[in-house]
Length: 95
Image (cartoon, rainbow, N blue to C red):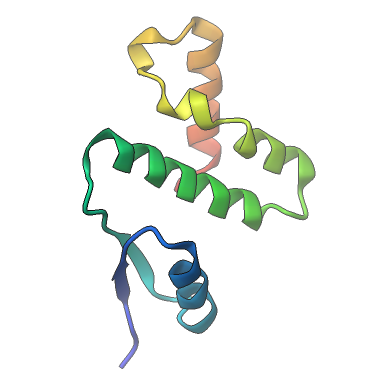
């Protein structure tokens, strides 16, 4: 039987171990504090994972690493060029 999913809080050590020993498993993040903090932490975790996956592509990695505030802002408050940049970022990075 293959492990399909692992539920965990946002502890990087657990995440790294699951990636190492169960790379096929989907990580399901939980957080007891909830609210807006959870959304920001999830965005940060995904950004870090994506940036780490792009270590051999410095330009693409830089785009991911510099995207935090763009991803956290309310889309209604983005300027036109920011909205375009966000759409390009989301299109290029499914997670």
